[in-house]
Length: 204
Image 1 (cartoon, rainbow, N blue to C red):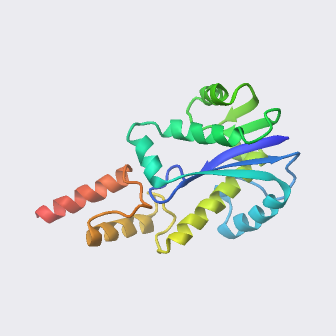
Image 2: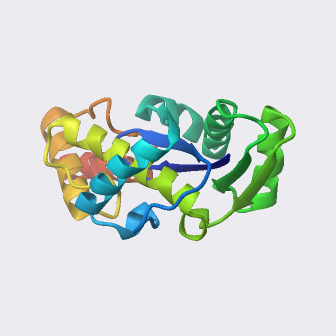
């Protein structure tokens, strides 16, 4: 079996981070590529097809848990723990492919093995583009996360700090309520800036 593991939502200011592991004898579904290169409609369609062909598991980290680790500068540790937990659900004789969150992909590999025990694993940057099995994991993770964002029930954009719609939503929310809801990652610089700017405006 080959297994791919990837995440969605690491850099978002809103919502969870979703890690997905996908296992299959082979990955031959047409059109699979990195989830970020696909439209939401195409991702949904591919996710449906992928689920019919693979074994898959999710690990979901809440904004609160992400804040806890980010404030200690240990977000990579949280992701390492999530990847390792997913990997341990599969047959250890599988061949594993992971999209490394560490700038040093070999270190990420060693750290995973220190938790899972000895396995055959390839750790690379942009593995979600290079290996279809990781692309499949990326697609399932992204679709799962998109559902979380949709279920929040507000028109808030993608949840990324680079999204003007997301930032506008956060500014308006904080201006009205003087606090943030539990689906927001308060350790993010975006949130700190909104709080600081609002405070300065009140002093004027």
